[in-house]
Image (tube, rainbow, N blue to C red; front, side):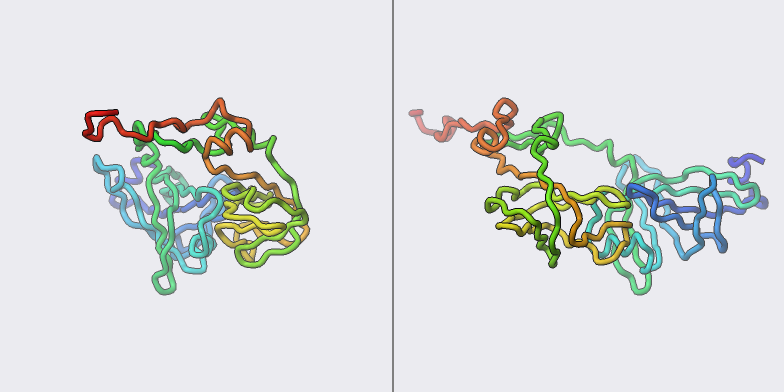
Length: 276
């Protein structure tokens, strides 16, 4: 029997679901079955996992689902602490245990997690929400609205402005490095290091001397393999931008790509006065 015929069969159907979480390297495969399931050589671990039904309507937002997992699940632990560097993708498979046939029944990403006793609820949105776009979002403003280091708009070379350094200590939201830098030169920039679980990043909120203030703490355990940051780790630091004409010209020599309008007239000709 084919997968479709099994799915609609009243007597032969024996479906289970498998959940594959992906953030760089795969770090979570689970199934709602009472035993482990093998798909394409991958093992999906049996656990207490379930989801809400996705509605098929003309509203994209209603195709979102909530996945309930044990609170000890790695995905829940990561999201309960702080947002991960990358997007956590979720692929849900429908599997027929009789034949082993399977197919993808839902695809999207995990947004956040909330505790519910011994379990955690993962809020997930459908991949189709990515088609939602806001048109004409660029504003007529003095400062530059472009994303720093974006190759398609800002065009500042990230590689050219990369600064390599070595971590000496980590304490809460402060990372100390070997070299000393001008105060707030890296404010709004990127702090980055390589890990076996993928490249990890933090936004630099401020810097003073050898200390960098970051937006989220470094994990104390390897929930994502290699995400911890012991002393001696080689890191990359990228300067930030105040999105002003001065920073664009003096700091990055990128005035040709400045996206703001620094010479907007101070006097508004449409304020009702007869003289302009």
